[in-house]
Figure 1 (tube, one colour):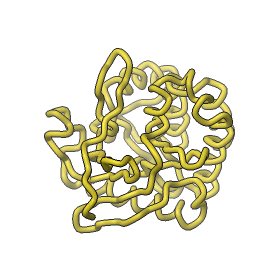
Figure 2 (figure 1 turned 90 degrees about the vertical axis):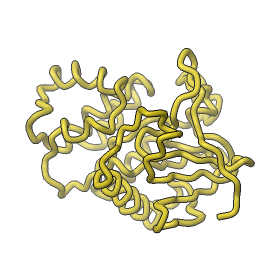
Figure 3 (figure 1 turned 90 degrees about the horizontal axis):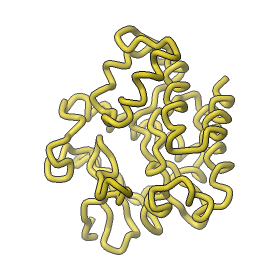
Length: 231
């Protein structure tokens, strides 16, 4: 693709410029019409704070992104960004966008969500319902995982998804690609929910844990309604 791209960051109040994603390298075109997920461990972008260093783990994240994204594209295209191109050799996915992501548009503040998309909460739950309908869990729920196209939320970041049929998971095996800030929220929640990070835990239980941790990014009632979808 000949379009010129820059690294893409979020401007978080009290934190400044932050990586848009901790796993892949985020790129955006100069005109903000194309977003790119580059499944490459770019040292310059991650600034030495790379979370996914193991090439096999990066390959697993890339394959999961493709598997669950394309499943959504086939069954619920209204809920995901339009794919412009997939460069399998370079592990890049290009999407058509209209501006920066939902989190950035909201100035990284939940209090501004309704100013960007008035019924964002209803749309988010519809997207969550589509995941459940297709029988998979999605643990990457950060508001930067959504873009807005013509007033509609569009979901990305399917690298952290698991099928209902996959075996139980040791949470310690996924610590490497969870932010330190998120881990600080996880530890006390795991104790409260009787989750042992050293032993295999049901994926459903981990999904409930994910919804709990994202109550700092979304109102409690939304995450509680999301939980109800998976009951």
